[in-house]
Length: 436
Ligand SMILES: Cc1cc2nc3c(=O)[nH]c(=O)nc-3n(C[C@H](O)[C@H](O)[C@H](O)COP(=O)(O)OP(=O)(O)OC[C@H]3O[C@@H](n4cnc5c(N)ncnc54)[C@H](O)[C@@H]3O)c2cc1C
Image (cartoon, rainbow, N blue to C red; front, top):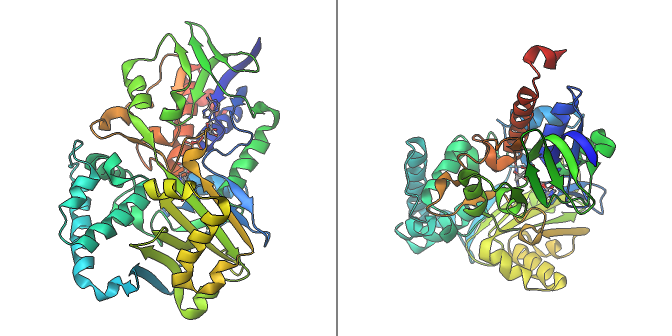
């Protein structure tokens, strides 16, 4: 039977970070990845202009210190997200700047959320949709719907107020969560996040097995056996990094304890369609526009300028929840046309002819099940609280297990570092041995 010291399930940032930290201590690892590529929710394609475009996670926040350090180790630099120019907040043909009442009502509601996050309040039984329905003003409610469902990547009737305020707390506040400069959307990676994941996987070489899904995990007192269609792997320890609702597809013998089983049963993955259109230049800037759009009507609620400095123009857009599922029903050509036509209302007709077009419906990806991350179902806030607590020789990582920056790359990297430290301690590596 194939043997290793630590088997790692999943080659996203959590799995790759775990593997790298253990390898650095001379511990043998084997990474089992079900997809035909490493990276998980990080995926970089190359545009017709030769530039990297991130179809999965892309932004690195100002406080994302571990992810930034990792990028630095691989010679990647960060560049700031473009913000100069006018951001368009529109409902039909009207700009929201002409509706101070709407902005004020939504602002007061967001302030209320921030206060609830700071004081650890908010009901786990009330959905965010119910909470929003009490805000005065139809447009203010729609604005909150757009902003919050973009932030969570889920329809607001699928998530509780407490889950939202917990997420805000984990991100260091609403300003950090929603903000560009200084916030979670501060910078982008030269080479792309998927490029960094590929570099991490390349460093591990033949110790990453692609197209190799873990189907079952058997725990005994002195070993663990991970079953895969290509044969079983025997290990001292295993680290599972698949998001909890996806990890639910792995059978466990003996069965998992209730708290971990609850994490897999009582969470759902976000629903998100992302697309990027690439142009020879960010031409909208000539008209004084920042490229950022918040639209209360139409099929595209939010778009942003993610162009590399001095390079071609990249427009990214994120469509969450039911709106994403509606786009899924169209043919690829009709979908592209629908999306670009919606953008052309704001950025002009040149938007209809990109050099290249990139898109992905993350909720249709069988390997990660959706994005940005798994969220507790209403009434099940505690589902993720103990999701990272080891089950005998099985350790758990992945962004969902991180108390800080849950749902972000930063959470994934920190969870990998934590799981590696846990495994080293279990294998008897003292801090002194580990340094040697
Ligand atoms: C559209 C989108 C936009 C995002 N934007 C941002 C952003 O701007 N900034 C940010 O910080 N974060 C962002 N995120 C979130 C970020 O991408 C994730 O938090 C992060 O990539 C999660 O890493 P992970 O290693 O925890 O999980 P994953 O990347 O999901 O890795 C888990 C891996 O496990 C594999 N796997 C699953 N089941 C099995 C099995 N049974 N056997 C073997 N392998 C298995 C999967 O294929 C996957 O490769 C975004 C995500 C999406 C989808």
